[in-house]
Length: 274
Image (tube, rainbow, N blue to C red; front, side, top):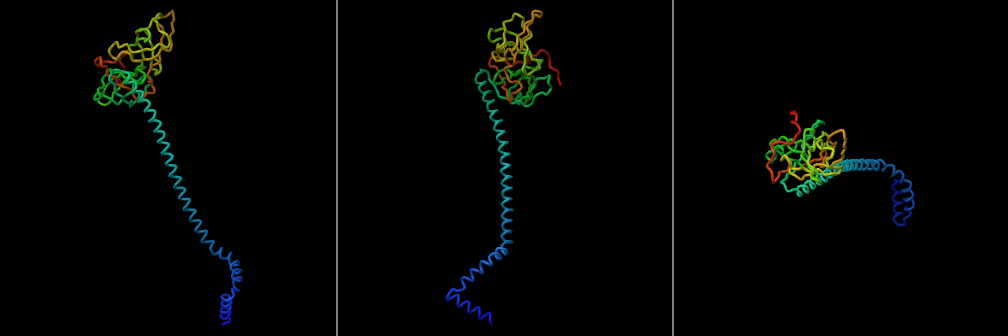
């Protein structure tokens, strides 16, 4: 009863005169820490939940960005490869535009791993018109010629193969000789020139057209060394192939407009069958 009477008195005073505002404010200040302590577990729970959710979201986004970065890097690498391939194809197309013969671009499928054999396999065969003895070019000069044509692929021997020989002439003066492969991709030999032959370093060697295997006028190589020994009847002459024999990815098959397909490639000796 006493508490009820006190409550009625305090409410009457508060409504009419507002005497309880100060007391209410004081009690509110005193109870604020208690209110914070009561709310703390709920606030901590909400904060931890939000943090975990945000962490999961950040981890997922980080993983997505990492995968996108890897994919972008892979695409950029492929883009660089496509740019290089595009440059090679443009060079081949420009090379084919400079020749009067019919040509066809072919990709190199395989390279013979035997260091003594300079052979490649291309993805064009007899169904594409390829034939045995057909010459191959790149953007810079003679690469080799086909030794065996299957229906959809062909095997070719490079001019650097030790069993291969190309009839050439010096572009400067028309001196004719034979360029022989040495088994090294960056070196040809001209073993049949006498000491008094008019040939010097830097001379351009082109196909002479003799033998009917290679059309005349295509670059074969550039003379890099001429050594004359009076004790020997022949000079030692070396040349660097004009074609990028060890770096090509594509080659051009050539059909001469003036000559019939040759039946046999020019070789020094018959290659060993393996």
